[in-house]
Length: 226
Image (cartoon, rainbow, N blue to C red; front, top):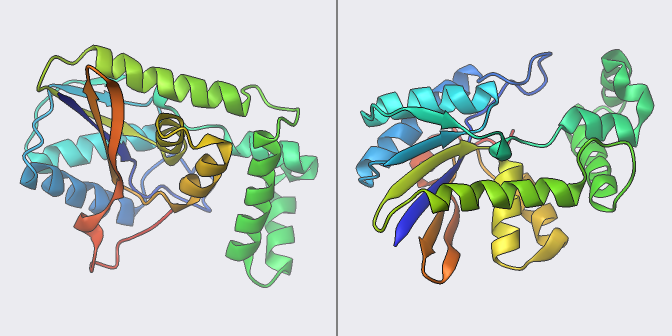
C-alpha cells in the first residue's frame, strides 16, 4: 500500500496583519516535525504543498531538518479556506480590521471572543449562507480531490508528504470516515500545528489510519492550534 502523510503547517502569525507566515515558534515546530519524520523513516517519493506561504515555509524547514532533498510540487487544492471572507460574511463591519479588534478588546478576553465569533462565522458557512466565493461543500470536494490526485501518483509502497492546513485535513478525514459536516466542525478547531494524519492508499481506496499525531511536540510546550 502507498502512504500519504497530511501535515498541518506550523504556527502562523495569528493576530498579525500578515497571518500567512510562520511565527518564531512555528519555525521551531517545523524543525521538530522534520526530525520526527526522519525518526519514523518517512522518505517521501512525492512532496506536495498547498500554495500558501505558511505551507511552503513549513515544507522547507521540515525537509531540511529531515535531511530530505526533494522537489516540492504545489497543488492549490490543499489550500485553506478564506477565513477573512468567513468573518466579513458573518459581520460586514469587520471588513475594517480596527472595528474587529475594538470589539474583541471590549470583551476583556479577546482570544475567547474571537473563537466564539469565528465558530459562529464558520457555522454560517457550513449551513450554506451567502457571501462566499467558495461554498463549504465545494471546499470539501476540492480537498478530497487533491488527496485523491496525490494518491493517484503513488505506486505500491511509495510515500507522499503533503504540507497543508487544518481545514483540508479535517475535510479529507470527515469525508473518508463518512462523518459529515458535524465531524468536520469538531475536527477543524483541534488540529494541532505540524500534526500528522496518515492515510493509506490501496486497492480498497483511501483509509485514514491515524489523525492529528503530535507526539513530537508532547512535553515541549510547543503545542499550538493557530
